[in-house]
Amino acid sequence: MWSFFARDPVKDFNYDILPETQETSGIWTLHRGKRKMGGEPVSVFVYEVSTGTEEQTQLAKTAFKRMKTLRHPNILAYVDGLETEKSLYLVTEQVTPLAAHLKAQSDRGGSGELEMSWGLHQIVKALSFLVNDCHLLHNNLGIWSVFVDRAGEWKLGGLDHMTPENEDASSVHPDMDKYDPPESPNGGEKWAGDVWRLGCLIWEVPSSPTLYLLTFYQTLVPHYCELVGANARARPNPARFLQNCRAPGGFLSNSFVESNLFLEEIQIKDPAEKHQFFQDLSENLDSFPEDFCKHKVLPQLLTAFEFGNAGAVVLTPLFKVGKFLSAEEYQQKIIPVIVKMFSSTDRAMRIRLLQQMEQFVQYLNDAAVNSQIFPHVVHGFTDTNPAIREQTVKSMLLLAPKLNESNVNQELMRHFARLQARDEQGPIRCNTTVCLGKIAPYLNAGTRQRVLISAFSRATKDPFPASRAAGVLGFAATHNYYSVTESAARVLPTLCTLTVDPDNNVRDQAFKAIKSFLTKLETVSEDPTKLAEIEKDVMSSAQPAGAAASWAGWAVTGVSSLTSKLIRTGPGAEVGGPADNTPVVSGTASPRTGNPVTDGVPVGKELSYKHDTS
Image (cartoon, rainbow, N blue to C red; front, side):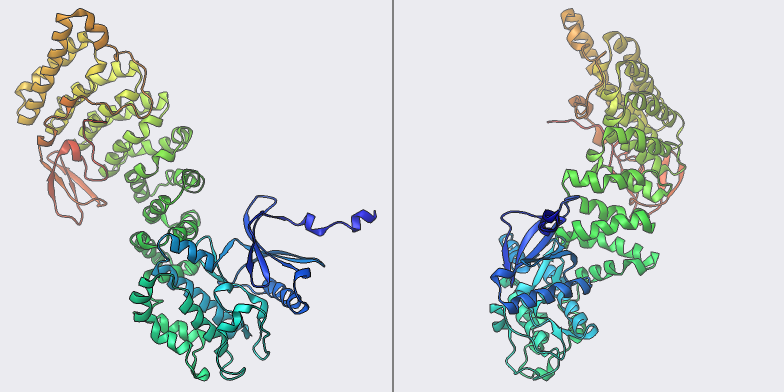
């Protein structure tokens, strides 16, 4: 029984302190830790009563209480704590001391101007909150009292010496002396000492000489000089200093600060403002710090889609941020959202997903593709919008390697047959033929025997010249799947009819293909023992992903010289009606002629037969 009352409360603490992670932080030692249940990372500030003076112990206890009650986005966030006779344990969000963060940044080339500006903005905002809202004085502002979270956000800590505005502070930290203002206590406004220390911090923070020369002296020095002015009564209130630096052209007036401020208030923004913000965000992300993109922008993008009905506008910035993630992080954070997006009825969302599929398809597992994505994607084959039908066809180049036997050999072939035979857009019929030739290695032998010759023969009778050329190239690209008997009895007769085609490019492709098939037949005729080698792929199984890019060199010849009768404009436009087998697409870019076989309907990635030299 007595052993129960003698139990060490530290053993029941909900957090583990990681070994060899200790560093000094004022009167505390800072450790990295993690929650015992769940493993979430945290920081643990520890104060040992035995190593401190009575005054320091009192300061530590006061800071412990302050941390529990002070809540502000720019002040180090209290998570949990434990107070015993021997020690104080203060658990906060996971952070790194600013000095250590700047050193790490310096090793990588120095902190950028944008990160510095937002960091200082946060510290000034926290100081303003203490002075103006809480009527407290920090009295310990310095590089040692600033911490950085994993998103690069600066947090104000070091609350050990905080006092009400009408009390004096005691000096315990040895570095505090160099930040002490020159005047005597109560020699100016109540905030005079804290803003003086802010000026010292601003002087000490920049880790790059270039940053000093190009930015600090140009935009910040006039306001900085007010902070460290000899006249304590003239030093500005932190709120006024922030306002001055946020004026146009000021150090704290830039796209990064504006984006952060918008994200902090995004819940109260109207839909139009959010839409415009996410549109502009895509361009700005290239200059934003990586950690900020991963840990602050990404959660907001995911939330905006899940709960804010942001729609397709979040896709471009989402995929940009995704480039910073590891494969495991991508699977965990982005793929579930993408899978959900495919069920959307929003056309803009669907076409954006199809256009940008190349950026995320490698992270999709086969089961999700077949059960949750492909059933939604196939609706695009029958969409009334030609641009969506065209992008759906092109997406099969990426999805086919992941489709199961039923989906690729039955469902997909059924849609391809309908498009090739009945779609009113010539370029879509053309690209369907091209895509069929490219995914042929993923079809089983029975499907290849049943589909390929019939499909390519149908294409050679298409009124759209580029479709006829695509049929010829389809035969050429899949030549290894035809027996010599099929080549002689079914393929060559079809190709021979195209030697008198009214389109010169179609005739050229037909003659080249005929010569190639005749060469194969002549080879077997001269040496029948080579028949097995030539027909080895005819009944071969479907190829695994990555094995379908082997194309005969002659299949490429002349592609670039095919007809250029397709009017093409910029992507992302509304699609108009067909005219003379040429899709008319309205948009902002100027029309240009293009290659129907390689261009197709002018949205997204181009389809073409290309020779793989790898």
